Amino acid sequence: MGAHQNQFRGFAKYNMQFNQPLFGQLAELSDAPRKQNMGAFFASIHATMNQILLAGWPAFAMPCRN
Image 1 (tube, helix red, strand yellow):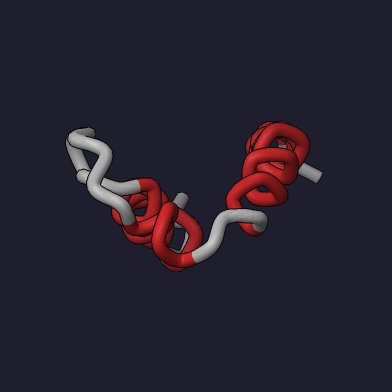
Image 2 (cartoon, one colour):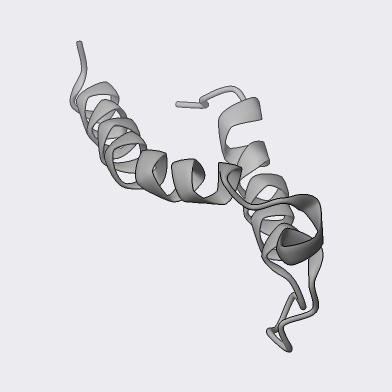
């Protein structure tokens, strides 16, 4: 396995370790509080998480190029 593969596996492990508790807490929210306008940049928790998903998706969807 190459050095870059090891590095990306480390990033994935780190993300999983720190995102699982966050997603667990978010799963406990009902729709109304999750979509409530909180005055943040993306307005709500729902919109913020949607932005994180959409902004991060291309990094995983694109094939690696040497």
